[in-house]
Image 1: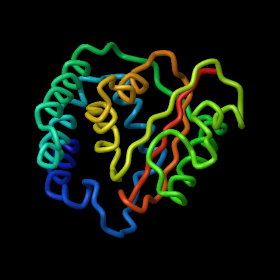
Image 2 (image 1 turned 90 degrees about the vertical axis):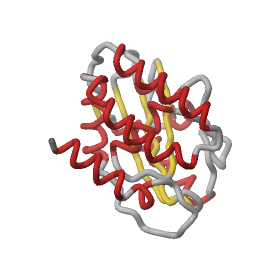
Image 3 (image 1 turned 180 degrees about the vertical axis):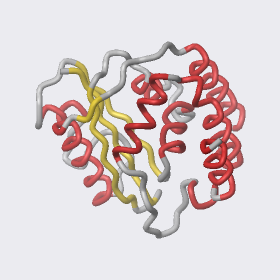
Length: 197
């Protein structure tokens, strides 16, 4: 019932949630709340289908290629229906520092993507703070709620390989770091680093 009310509110406030080129200071979801949502998704992927539908209803209006967007949404729905339950992720201080470094860099530089202004990549940023056997990074811009952040990763309409989706649903990862920042074009940045020790 609460999730349905939240989804209804998301649709009403969609203009405030969707990426925009306007200055603002949006309130971000907390890292703890986002991790809780990630772990709920990993434990029960099918429970996330209403969120995918709400995201699609909001974002399809601005999709440059509606056919490609619809394909990504259909794939996301199928994946959530078929995905087995996964182990939860645990916060890791080293990964949080690596995510915070990149979030701060994108805030300063206005960059979009996984390569930092210092030419660092996700692996080099994570290796600054710890040693890991497997690493991944997912980034989204313009969203301030856990549902919209996660839906953007799962639909992943801008990446034909659906790399963000694959990382989020990877059974390889056990640890996570989460950081947020402002972005001069998209208002917000959310950087999530994933790894296995």
